[in-house]
Image (tube, rainbow, N blue to C red):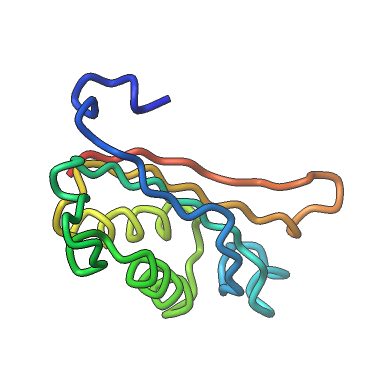
Length: 127
């Protein structure tokens, strides 16, 4: 687990898991014909000091809605040949969010092959 890294010892992990998005993704001809379901999971590592609100106000922390909407908008903005490209851009988006020290992102295509539960990619990036 990434939280074992001493550089994250003062962080909390904020996450969105299995966000289902219909996206145009894949390099196979059959994948280019129609959008397919993609599951996106994201872990944001944020210092506790930057993710605590003495006022109990969302303005003081990272807004899940902002991250969720940004990822959905990005994933549906164009055709992606590769999950790697989509994930790299998701990481860039997340790391631009003030307070985010690191991000772990994963994409899965659960419907691409009939003999696999899912195929996917995972990446971890430092801000």
